[in-house]
Image (cartoon, rainbow, N blue to C red; front, side, top):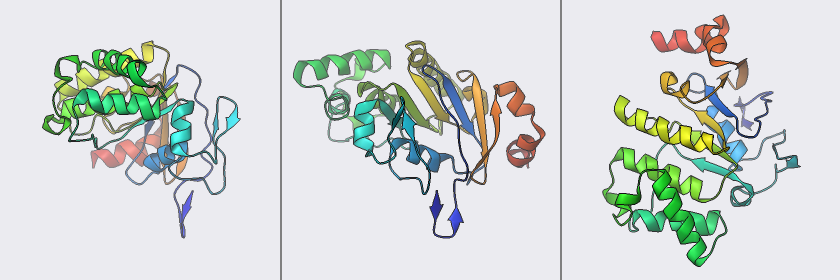
Length: 230
């Protein structure tokens, strides 16, 4: 992926298996969010391809990929403020998941229960605190019925206790067999869920493997952990 003269992604090549949980780490500007934009269909790689379940989806739109099973939760939640929590999730089930009427409402109710939001289903989304907004962002993603969930720094801005709650919810998602690709700067919460880390720097993958091995890699320490400590 290139923006003008700036090469943002270069030779990024990896696969995620069904039900796997992969963490993406790296310094600011490493190309992590651009990678999610490519995977979700928000931008098209130049050149390069994206495949999903054996099908080339490089030219498919984000809404088409969503219907195929690619869900995404953004770093900054932007719920429909004039709607209730339930209505937000029904919209996701209807337009992202392709469900109608009672089926969309049943999906929404199940997802709200799964994400710990059932008790506030009738609250307006604009009244929610950050943790509940993050949970709602996750719920809207799950309501589309994804086979893989792309998470972009969903732990950002949370306290340690709030992050622990979110980790529990994401673990539950993984236990259901949904694959996870998660960008996160808070490494200690990331490694509680993922069994594989991909570290990026200046648009390239510099390490890929079990978290303990990647975090001890000298190249990773120099590019990411060392910078974070200075």
